[in-house]
Image 1 (cartoon, rainbow, N blue to C red):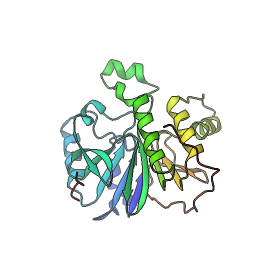
Image 2 (tube, rainbow, N blue to C red):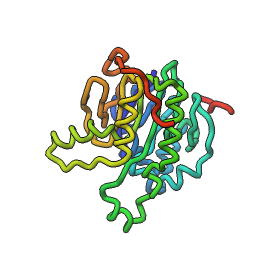
Image 3 (tube, rainbow, N blue to C red):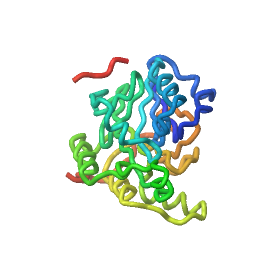
Image 4 (cartoon, one colour):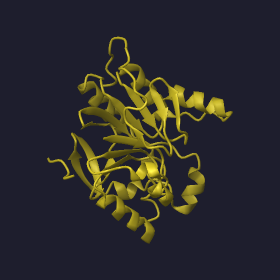
Length: 247
């Protein structure tokens, strides 16, 4: 079974949630960024990483803005379920940007990254990494893989949402609009690709936003929630131009 959850931010209390503890051997938990347990590199963090590594289920996360990408990017790169990952340790994986994974017969496009609104403060603390902001090469690579897949996937897992979804959520909150180039990139992907549902975590809500977009935070949702039929899209337009890990 495939499940998806939102930003965990290194919160160890999440490991005791009833929804988290229901995961069993063979399951895959996808985390929509800000995993957060690879951030401080202290004794507790090392214990938590060991905990995830030794579970019988796979934990696989896209990066957000509270993940130490300088450390993550030094981890061993390998292929898992048809896409590139960093193997952090054991059954703990980082899903690299712009990859398409085939998990239980579902094609899942992943793309992490974001832009810290508190960058100046975190720079002073040595807790901001330039790599959090996707490069043009990474965006082009993701677009190319989608083109090769016929612009047709089952699910999309990201940290940030598409531009219009983010703007609508911030407007409802009465917050300033803070869209960036990554939100615009995702907006274009949403316009040109077929997908059943898109999950993201950066805005820290458990809420179905549109028929095809869900913001997830503390809940652990089965990937087919909410159940939807595949959407109709207009004629597809190109977006832009070995071994599996043992489980």
